[in-house]
Length: 316
Image (cartoon, rainbow, N blue to C red; front, side, top):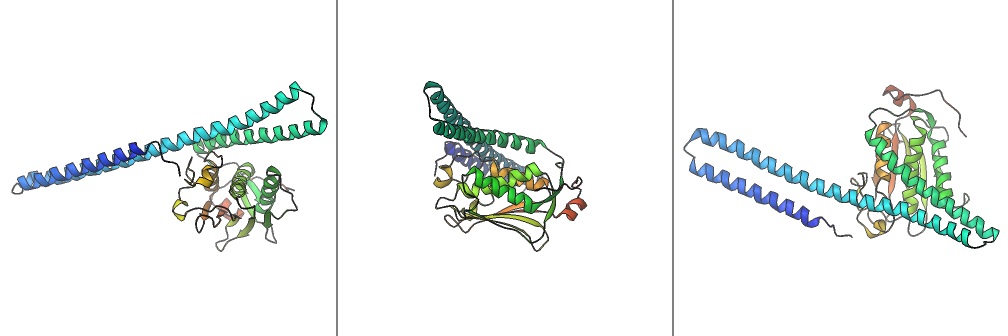
């Protein structure tokens, strides 16, 4: 676990807040002792002191939160810099190799393939950052249309297999679908982002071999669910509510060793909320895998809550 560079500032802020609260309590007790016979000073002094204590406490809380937020932003900038620099350096290296010496056609095609993968990685990082900014500033509902969540899941699995060089016939990612279409009112690009991020995390953090299960089903409330379950590094239950925060990454060595921007799960939650749904995470602890469930209102309920819908278009 990394030791925060701002830990001394956080400790100082907390100690200062405690000292100021202690001083306010001491002054209040002294005021009561000196003026216990005077009703008016006593009545005025107690609420003023309580307000002072509350103000100091809130100021300390906000200061600590701001320090932690700045630390997460610094980590994000470092991660994004690395995510941008690494593929660019790789592409430059292969281009210089192709320019300086003759390369057999088979090797040349391999270089092209690697450069395309690096460019896709670079583009994905840029798009993720741009989407985070757009979703933060977007106040209205996204442009939606009737979609079959089963088709969205099939597309997500196909992309995950392709991006990670896995064979469609492999059992690395299994897909379980209901017998009937599960319609939702959604924005296709945003749902591709949300499902892709969930699957990407499941594959990335499956350190002992990839074994990911994807399920699409309707839960007991009728919500359309996209669920991803892996057998990877797992998450401490105390961290489950924090992982959807922007820039937040679980402070575990296996997580920090993997490159990332800390925006993936934040985007999933933002997209789920804009669609009138939610996303939850469940894990029994480190090393025991994680299950993420994206819940979306079914089509009829989505329309009842004001989500727009365009005429249905058939999709492969």
